[in-house]
Length: 315
Image (tube, rainbow, N blue to C red; front, side, top):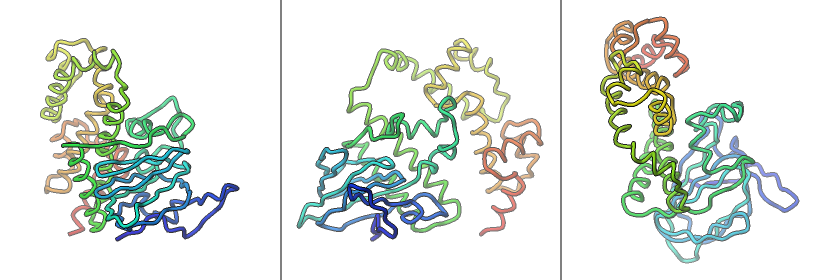
């Protein structure tokens, strides 16, 4: 059993609030950790931290106190505590408890969190925004899951636990992918439970089948020359409206989505086949090897040759 928030270093404010720093709690090699906590009874102190904390109740009950409000948390309930938000947890005495928690810096979700201007938001930033307002304060407290959604979130968190404990090669990519799935689900549930629907969302829903068909077509034909004009003709929609809908449904521009998809497919081929870099370049839809190399390095941080060499050198 891992124990969260062990105060290796503490700084107390005038209100005697403990401050936990990610460098002590999480570590510097990977700004993320996930753990299981089954400590019955007791309470945490009023505290805050510079990382995001997510707790999911698998079994038992507890009280989460945040921003002067108390929330009864039970099976299927989850909270997200943003950075620098004072909160505490009170456990019910004599009761079995099972909690899956994960803690991560915003940079684990959005690598440019601290440097990107407010005018240039990214898809990754969109995962954080629903849990932070413009001043970075707390905007959500409790999310109640049920049915298939509850099972899906539990499955994703347990998969993260297993990958984190094994620590196999590229496990951090798996952790981030699952975390983004969890946060996307929470955003949807948060909107449902707060009744945040509007006429624009209702209009967008009418185009869901069309956009899902378009995305499926892109995923199947990514290796071909997929000009935007071709897609618009196929689905009988104007370029302007297609681009606006695509950005709303995927969070990315059409070009960014296609490039990310092609790089992802290229990485899989580099790791799993003996194909040359040139062959892979054309196989995934790029038609220029130097351009492919530049895009791949921009997306992954390394060149295709370095990625392939590193992938084949580790058993």
